[in-house]
Image (cartoon, rainbow, N blue to C red; front, side):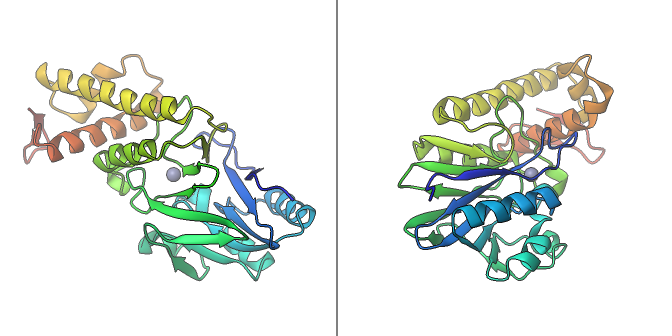
Length: 269
Ligand SMILES: [Zn+2]
């Protein structure tokens, strides 16, 4: 019986997911278990999960999905057919959730899910996506951070697909205030220095914001021109992501009342 969360690889390496996602199994003392994130339904993921459940003498009762992006949610139907006792829960994002045919149970901010005496609290932490939940275990001061934190990388904020940088800043601040001991991200290794990594992500964004402001001050008025000035010499394959990031910053500056855009889509301070 292991009470520390067990990482189980989703086996979905790609350009977007790097080496692939982690899902995490939380096994309770009463023979129930919860899986954080559903993976993509890869047969190796399903096999490793089944092996772990039998080693822990546990039945899968809960699948808690951090958000509706395919690398976190698309494995839900495959899990449902193998684990009929499992309930699938996430913060609702109707248009996205209906892509995966399971009976989603809605989780709201502050809702708790218990496996044995382990209690997981859902924290609505939008920004990367509108439906993003982190899961907090107060007993061990552990947070499953989904896609809010990626060690050594910048988290994508797709403003055109429900991402919001203003919310993302607030979500990082909220996690920081919990004073956690461990962060377990969906991508990348376990984090034992939460404050340092969360502050690093916040500082990285503030630095980008200063660069966007400098570019606006220099008269650069389009997403393309601003991205080019900041990410000079960038691999062409990464240009769309860089522009998406600039767009996220401009939208935040608009919300802050610092930047404005005209009908032709040109930006200025
Ligand atoms: Zn995501």
